[in-house]
Image (cartoon, rainbow, N blue to C red):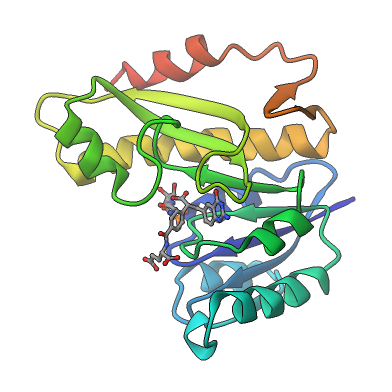
Length: 214
Ligand code: NHR
Ligand code: GAR
């Protein structure tokens, strides 16, 4: 069994998608939030998953918060740590401790739109395609090796919420997929790139086509 620790800050729908996927060989060891009121904690509790809260506001600086967060995570002996809507930038020391076993899902087609408010920025830029990216986390914010992406069209009357909802549906598909590949030992880091071994999966065909049904 591979132990997985999931970090959230809010709703936790990506965490929920990973739990519901019931990935063979994976055990969700804990769900940890930096916000005590994160809705996702309730889902985790109701599914018998250990939860933890570490409020970043109780710490004077990022390094102190990250030191305690690392200790809490490691008490669950993780093979993989998954950021699922986790909203705190992590220090270099934290990221290096989990090198090669820390994943994030970011709501844009990286390297476009790193950082926050991605859907509003995509609409503002007038792009025709938007989406989501699962990547390994490195110290360089939203710049780590890409594991999988999903694209969706931007439609004429989209607002931020409509676009976010279309992207989120794809997040719920690709994040469990990436975690499954990791647990199967099929993701290899080749320098700055992540390579999926023996992949029969065709990103362009199966990511874009379902979205065109909207
Ligand atoms: N940490 C490192 N070192 N590298 C990455 O690639 C990271 C990371 C921490 C989080 C997720 C990321 C995203 O997918 C992520 C990737 C939060 C912020 C942010 O600015 C930016 C990117 C991401 C997550 N957070 C503010 C901060 O001061 C707080 C915002 C808030 O609380 O609402 O940390 O987008
Ligand atoms: C998701 O869209 C995720 O990609 C994004 O926040 C949402 C969290 O939803 N992440 C970020 O913006 C990270 N900065 P969830 O809590 O329901 O999974």
